[in-house]
Length: 232
Image (cartoon, rainbow, N blue to C red):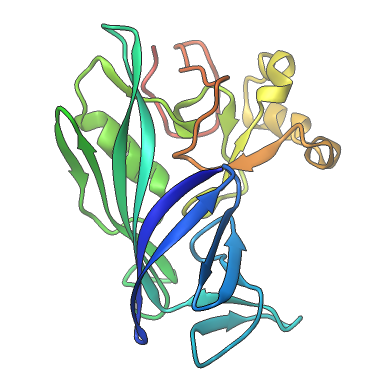
């Protein structure tokens, strides 16, 4: 379980919160209410208390928190291809959810992503719908020999051809490495991406900033469904 330190702000105040992540879901407790969810606009409350938070309510009586800002620090892995070493640096994300967002048709946005590295600061300061775009933008700023070594840059991860959310909506296929080698187009991917595979846990969602020991950077001949193009 990883731990991320965040500053949470809404009309009721500003507080520091520790967010735990298992790579697929986030968990935290704020104002004595527990939350969990895969994305920042899908953080579901264990109970509804309108004196403590604003909620997006659902028919079953559950609700996700909304109308807040979050500054989140995430340690991420990088790889130096010249020295063949892996190291960790801090990534800071500024996220906004709710009625004050400015991207038309969306209730969430990533306004800034900053990599504070030992060799410099790299920043994407732009309103974006997906963290994928921000991470790729950061990668393009890095020295040629430095790679983000996270789930987004892994040869075993894919987005759904049907679409995805801002964060935590990329999927891991590391349990189907042999089958994945035969995938050459999105229809092949969908044939592999079955309800049975999901139920068995062979295909599961991960966070773009996460990593695991089986991570492999892609080579030029690898096919995958995402915009990542930095090959090894």
